[in-house]
Image 1: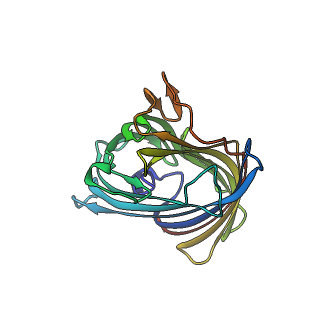
Image 2 (image 1 turned 90 degrees about the vertical axis):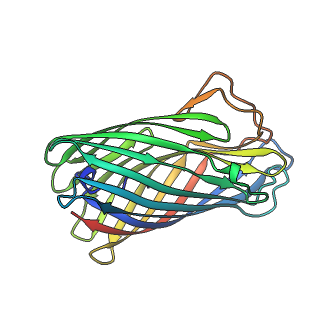
Image 3 (image 1 turned 45 degrees about the vertical axis):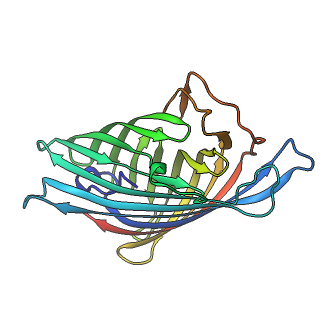
Length: 290
């Protein structure tokens, strides 16, 4: 969500995504138990954000936004005794256009991720990023992002390399590796199709002095149709080649993670491993075109 709120940085993507609501369904199996346990991970997410311009030429502005998510593990699963976890993240940032080619951005990212069994002010984890975007010619912007987040599994360094590229009138490529990548092909004025890669690595406080690490990476194919000039509906089918839902004690943490890669000590989870598998996602977006 945090990379969709800045008009100047969306040259290849071509729009600002001011609101997104989506639902994802992931059938899963816990193996190595007797018998194997099968159930469904249901994920709901809502993101919104908008700029508050501080100058008439729009070269300097605040970014105000928020996201909310619910992860629901349906059914009965004795080997994985979690039903729901929640995430709330306000976003506050500042964007400054240094020159016609260079834009800098600073974003503060506090987060409250928990099962909400016993919530306190100290459960809020802090983080932030700094991003530089460089555009030498129309239709192509390069980005570099560096940041830090305090997670329940330990400290996390964010290091991303991204681009927004309008290849031609039919093809667009945008994303911030290794977090996400999207390749879009325009079928006609209302219909689009393409490839997407999404990766998530976050954590949630649990009762009994435990935490859940939620780590997935899933490439997929999507079809998208514009219901109006601003509303787009996207259906995605993907496959999780990484799907980790790990429970650990709060005092048992990694030494450091750089994006998705643990450095040094990595704790062993208390629960059995999840199976890899398919995902089905439906998203509705409100977009403002440049």
